[in-house]
Length: 112
Image (cartoon, rainbow, N blue to C red; front, side, top):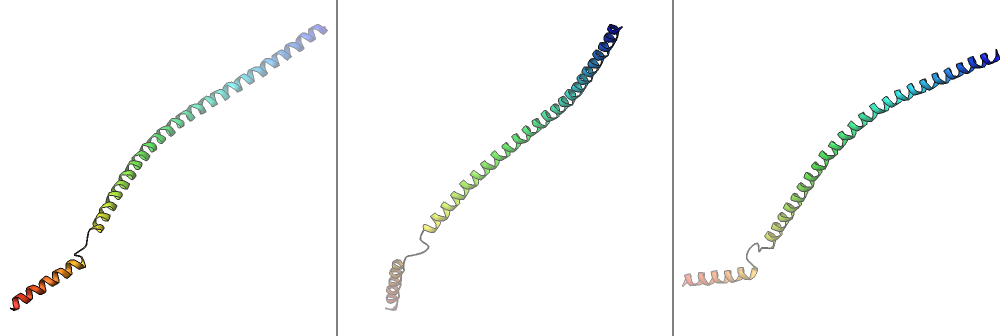
């Protein structure tokens, strides 16, 4: 009789262990599915971020090119200003004195 009790007791224990294992497997399957869904969502998000990064890098390159062109244009404009400011703005005082003498001479000639 004791053996029958042992068999029944062992059978119940085995059944409880099997039930526990099945419960753990179901829990793990559920967690796996949740993680799989989350992973897919994160993969899509990563792809979206990669596309945004690519677009921003293209925009940055466009801006860098624009800045370089504007800097070049600025340098050219500054050079033109320097060239214009280096030119004489009129006649030198020696030229003016020479012209005044010539005008005086002409006036004297006309008075004669």
